[in-house]
Amino acid sequence: MKYTPHDYQKYCIEYIREHPVSALFLDMGLGKTIITLTALNALMFDELKVNKVLVIAPLRVARDTWPAEVKKWDHLQNLEISVIVGSVKDRTAAVNHNAFIYIVNRENVKWLVEYYEKNGLRWDFDMIVIDELSSFKNYQSQRFKWLRKVRPFVKRWVGLTGTPTSNGLMDLWAEIGILDGGERLGRFIGRFRESYFKPGSMNPSTGVVFSYTPRPGAEEQIYQKISDITISMKALDYLDMPECVYVNHEVEMNTVERKFYDQLKHDLIIPLEDGDIDAANAASLSNKLLQMANGAVYDENKEARNIHSRKLEMLEDLIEAANGQPVLIGYWFKHDRTRIIEHLTACGYAPRDIKDSDDITDWNAGNIPVALIHPASAGHGLNIQSGGHILIWFGLTWSLELYQQTNARLWRQGQQNTVTIHHIVTKDTVDDDVLKALASKDVTQEKLISAVKARL
Image 1 (tube, rainbow, N blue to C red):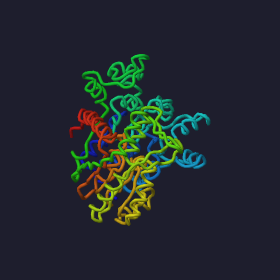
Image 2 (image 1 turned 90 degrees about the vertical axis):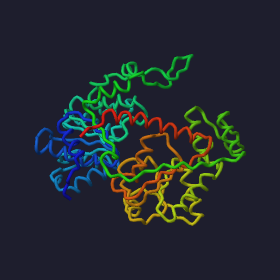
Image 3 (image 1 turned 180 degrees about the vertical axis):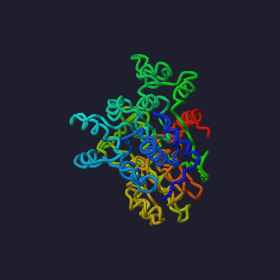
Image 4 (image 1 turned 135 degrees about the vertical axis):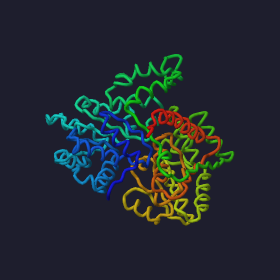
């Protein structure tokens, strides 16, 4: 196919070409991959500024999306690529294959750096592209530490993401730091934290800080610090996107069910004859309460205990109300998937998981009336907007990134219908807290995106 870029895509392409370090906070569906590949093509063959590129991406995106984009467009046919995934033997062969662009999944970053070190090889990638920069927000992760080891040897960096601050402004230190070596936000997380944040909650006895909040004016200062390497665009500004409607559907537990929920919330344990339901700490309690809000919970023996079927009944009603239109269901816990399949099968439906390319093809062809998807596998690289426009969140996730990315599987460029995002929420439970948390995180993200927004 012949590539005719939109004006905003031309702007982004030139930005990558002109900036040795660049962070593109582009909304889902704006074409981050083709923008970057076009810029790489120009840097390699027109300007002769780059010889060898490493792209780091989520596994499925590395294996499928980037190679598919190269094959798709006429002007990229000179780009020989090598995909470093699979077994050790396959990865080794891919590293030693002559190519211009090498694509590795982020879990194998450590392996790749170690491979070069163990074999006495000079790190010869002179440009690195990180697809989904937000996956490097944890400065304590192996992928971050090992990539930082080779950072001094790389002269050009590109970071791509649509969710730069999925857990708050603190994420930016690692994300920007891996690109610029700490030039803008400092080389040490402690100094960054001291400069821009203050303790939010802490243990008065030990002084251990549980959370931090930005100091007055800190957000604006941080945005200003990174503005020279960052551009941001929202899909609604540049694409003729259909409307996206969010709807909450409340269900309510009865007295007995509520008693179980409240007991775990207050006592951290529900004693049962053949396996207690307990929570060891606050994180575990939050997880258990989310499960109970959905209708089942794992006991100490990892057996799922059914609590209620309120969400299943609402799910059935929503599917019936769709009147034959394809419905995509997002779930979080394994027992949710099991109960959804059992319940809907008994109602005469045939729910099917969206996992591989055959599932995607059948969904986009309209051959799957009811589909199941897990946010962790739906977060990146799935183009399924042709198959439907209704997403039902059976169980919510605390992750803003996974939440937004999953929604964007349907609400993206190419969608022809108004997209409806349904949340099934159990009243007066942790579900309410999750919705509020997702909303408050999005406010911070919107501030960042607005602050560095590209003006064409």
